[in-house]
Length: 189
Image (tube, rainbow, N blue to C red; front, side, top):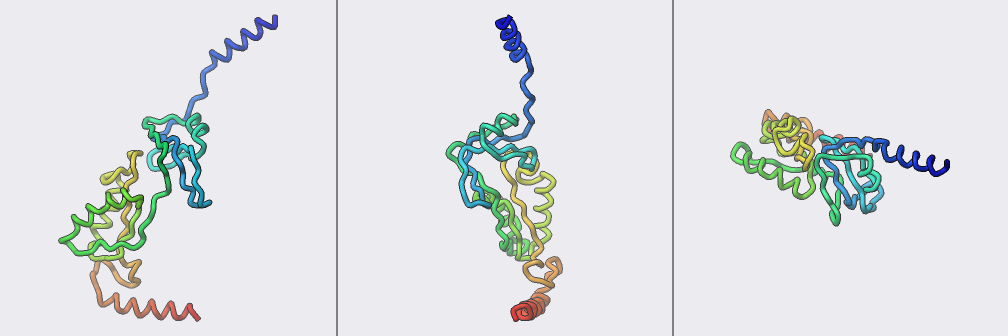
């Protein structure tokens, strides 16, 4: 009797469907994650990504058991870290250098910089168009779930308060600089 119950239990366990795994677009496995919050590296981690959203980061054995993906990357011996931001770039040179400046964007991604902020202001409309193109999936890899796309932020006026980047009013920059110094002096005391 005990034998037949044991046999029945084995048969039922074998026939039971495996728990359905959640679907992701990309599963990065066996990576060493750089945890910027703790300042430590964590080996043998997996990252599940859907679209532009990181769904899970954790021990490879746990995340890979929970998720399956259309695309898998074996990152053994490699490091994964959050994208870096360069908060002070100058895409300058006016209309003559727009194409050259745009061609620099993939270079930022190659070095881990996923977001840049333009402070030059003389090609601001182009920088804002690049940002829209990334957000809409027309540039880089936005929304495709593979490599990150660069995210330019522009306008320049944030770097030079009081200046409308689209107006090209350099005289306003001088006035803004004087106002900025006054504001800083007022807070310093």
